[in-house]
Figure 1 (spheres, rainbow, N blue to C red):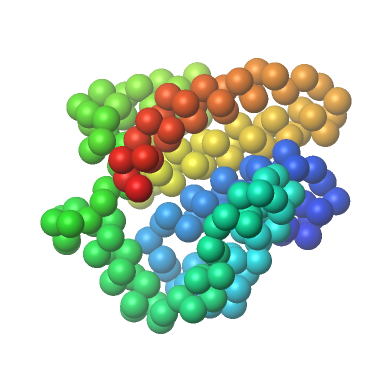
Figure 2: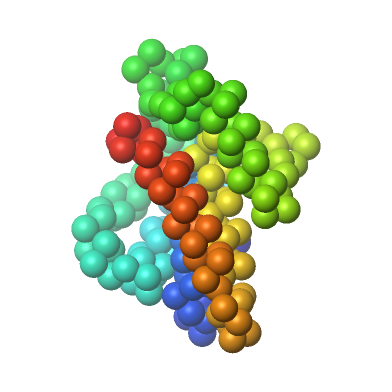
Length: 180
């Protein structure tokens, strides 16, 4: 993961890419490395710094201080399973778009076409499906990174910016309110 220190000398465009990466990590099943980053305050600090660069007004609205009191590894893993694994908990909330905007196979095919349009494909052995929130956030990270690199070299990033906005409007913006 790119350090936020490097982002300070960069731009809000790179910070946006880093924010999408942080959010993707935050929605993954918590492994020992992620739990360590949460406990040490690294995730909280980097989220706060990214938001300060991108949207200070949003930073003021979010309560990311609760990350400081995250439980043990077992607690976080159990809570993640309780909240997001439909097979383990009937009251869980799926992190897969297809559950909210079905049929699921059609939703995944549509997303794959979007990813493929930008030359991306799923990696063999990838643990998450195309409609999972982490896969969508990683794609947004990619688009934001491409945009940042174009801006850094003085080129037009209008196409990447439009693609990012279009993707958000078509996918996360349509199903995340239901997840909430």
